[in-house]
Length: 502
Image (cartoon, rainbow, N blue to C red; front, side, top):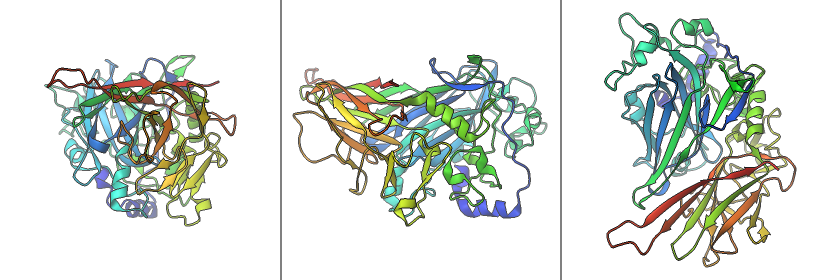
């Protein structure tokens, strides 16, 4: 994937030193004036709140184009725990009405890897996608290879429609069209639009010449976590963001960036990621880093910061409510997932900084939700401080310490995705290093209810009135001991969180 990202920083520096062969086209063509959470689950952008390949888990991902008139050029990106560093991304080209499927598992080296047998086109080509594990070059260099591999095994997924591909006999459309379950996915003697997509073109008109137009709505996704050894599974739908004008779906900016490791001066302005900022960024951004959730997508998004603040406002919550089961009668266990997909655009971690007080790098235009007062750095993980756990009988306390790989103990919630695992009143023992249901290892937290089953609330605004952008679900495993011999009695349950703004 991504040319296996060999020599990432050297390649970026080389491109910068050469001045670049072409200008960076600015995302343009939008008619939409806002970006909103889509209640239907269909939109222009999607967020899958969690992926995991820990403890026998694998993920099945289905990416669905519900648009029968237009194909879609889509960016698919995986960000790892704890700090939302990019560990994998690719382009997927969906024909009208198409669906692309993939599996994410753990390889022999302990890293996640994606495989697909789908006939839809990708960049890079399917053989490279299947042969390349998730990457660790941008992860904390001070930890071991095994720890970096661990950071590829959990995180969340961004999905962004970069452009529409209207049905046509020219341009990229016939190259991605499905026939007998297969696509050309290459240039032909008369059509070189496939290789043209590896270059940054000048403007919307230049992309239109190759069959790409500003994106419309229509994208959806489903995810399934499967644990074959435990005979368990959980599933859900991706959260959708939709570009709208006057409250109805409208075209967003054409935001196609090549899936290449080319770097150019000024590329970081298309992202709110604070590590990409400035003339000498902490992390040199390259073409495949874009677009991300913050790349300006609608009229009025005058900067990446403006856009990500709008997304964060749509996701912010004062508290999270859900149910938990820990009954010993059915061997019930519960994990709550809290995913914070806008956090990386507010603050990143500079792994090269020796001074702990300077490791957190804030975007001053985005950091309201994840300000210095609401966060702290422990080790090289950024932690959200002081959430309040309240059980159903109104007993309350601050959650216990978090445990991450290597035995390092941190304050809650120390991951861009964090897992709160429940212990029932009948359970004792030391804090867990692996969560009970999802087998999370990177950012786990422990709560305890006053009864075996009930409901609970996590307050996110204990030390201020600023809400936190968060999504997620409760994951339950249980066993029916009364099933007939030879019949599997394991059950998995998933409940989306209730996210309260007031």
